[in-house]
Length: 419
Ligand code: KE4
Image 1 (cartoon, rainbow, N blue to C red):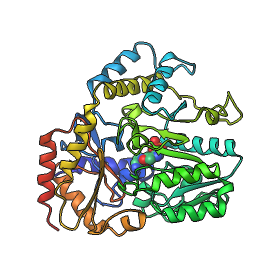
Image 2: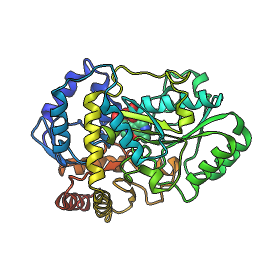
Image 3: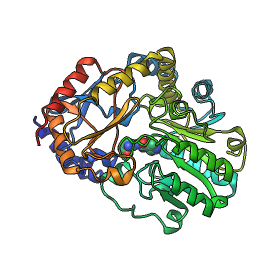
């Protein structure tokens, strides 16, 4: 494949944008090579400036569960452009979207719309601190919850991808409020709560980890987190920015039948537009300004464009529940025949091929993967017209637009991989 025009654009981009990209993982640093500059997406495919096309398993890192340019979303955006783009004032459609989210996730009794997953998790942590009067938070190694100062501790996603030990610029005082534990370790949870339980404001967890690569919860892990948080008065926050409306219509909390105190969501609820949300028990959320004393705000929060796209996606998903069965089946087909020495984790329509022959159940086991061999596989697939997440420590995503033929072509390309 020819990437010459992308290479030239990357050089130009680097002159004005750090690393030439507006989010680090896009730079292909861990897999090497030149990131294609994309000109268009349609259905399951994306197209680049050099005329190459790819079956896309990044799907904008999760939002595009219906694929690129789904007619329902394009129609909704065309319609809303007739009335404007932003008002900085309340609109009815924000209520509609919040009610649709709560219908799918009843634990979100009250909801605040924001503009990114980072804003959602940052706000949820602050609200949990304000509600409990406590300072400490538990997170899990390899989980990523956006670039929140206090959560960039042993984080996954781009931090893991770039092998940044811990991000520069975070005051020790912030990092010291965060206790990072091994994902899936019930022992570590029990020990930590026994020692600090009455000082812990929140426990935030990706109920299915996606940012160390896809790692399901071990049996009993989420239940233990729920039980310990209840016992110690700690706010249990499910970060469902990735899993929400993806691993089930009601997210991981529906799939695993756990009721968190708060939930953060994003990605799918905007259909590719910038929107996210946090919410939870009314007694907690009623502390959020202007109803209560905990401040959080946003110029474009509840933006009519993003809200309209979100309503279109959620309405379509609610009207076509069979999508979730189809997504699970397609993703299982995709993961059925991994290359030799590869461990596959898959939950719903998210998956990761770990280049290790050992089970991957947490960040330590994920890091045992051969990232160099993953890089070779990544470029073999890219040259074969398949666009995977450019990092061993990310999840891939199947959309409703991926056809049986797409899956078959992807499996054929993966089977042709030779070290
Ligand atoms: P954003 O601030 O990027 O909208 O969301 C942060 C976030 C929070 N919680 C979870 C579980 C997430 O997966 C994310 C963001 N996910 C990454 C992909 N691993 C976004 C891709 C990127 O950083 O460019």
